[in-house]
Image: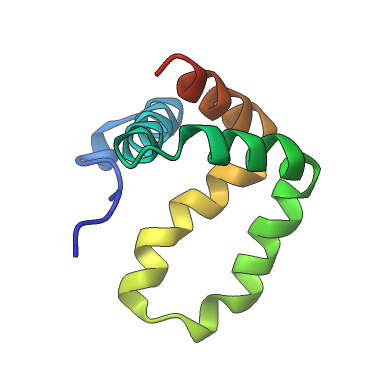
Length: 95
């Protein structure tokens, strides 16, 4: 299964560079599937709940398999930070 993946070589990157790459990979993945408009709308509507959503993920994390946990954890952290959500919205608007 081809997923959106996580940044390669993230141990060599700073936290901000890793988040930047994660946001750009996610924006590219969304754009390739032609989902830019619906995702932008959902992000705008659910922006106040981003932190709550990431916490729900943490609550459900024990139910996920180890492989899924490792792939989803960076995205949960991404949506905790409102600046990253803003950056994702900007990246989607520029596509």
